[in-house]
Image 1 (cartoon, rainbow, N blue to C red):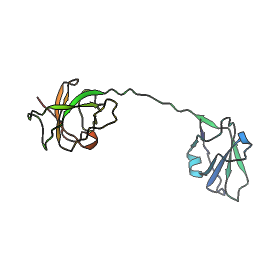
Image 2: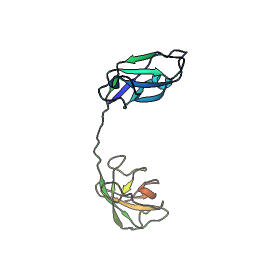
Image 3: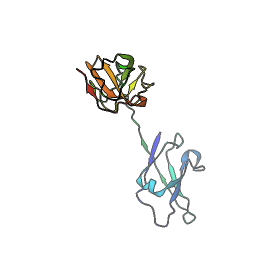
Image 4: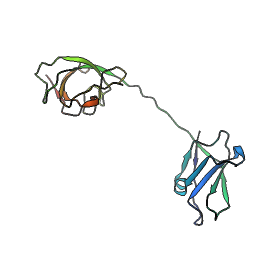
Length: 174
């Protein structure tokens, strides 16, 4: 569990490095060391406090200071959001040229999948994959390829780089 440790001020005679201890072991062994004063003033989050910690002791590493501060920890929570990826299937030509493929009659013979940046269209920055899991990118040469996406109703010409990224002008072929 994450614990947020925040100090509102630190005396001018304090050093700049601090250690954090837990009441779980009687404040014997620090669970965090060398925490800067800047981080503590900004709010320092740790996930290393032992389970069951109800008090944290903050000690300064300076020889000038023998005092310490004990605080009750502020626990923070983490939220994870899962987003479903929608893969669109299509095909790309194995043939490529230096300019637009529209009107060239290239056959789109390599199956590809795409999670479009903008749903319903093909955009610069989209990445084409040769597997439905999106783990193997289509290896382009930096030239133009024909792309057919029946789900979008699109046949297009686009520059595709290594690792499947569409980087160049996209021309919708009619």
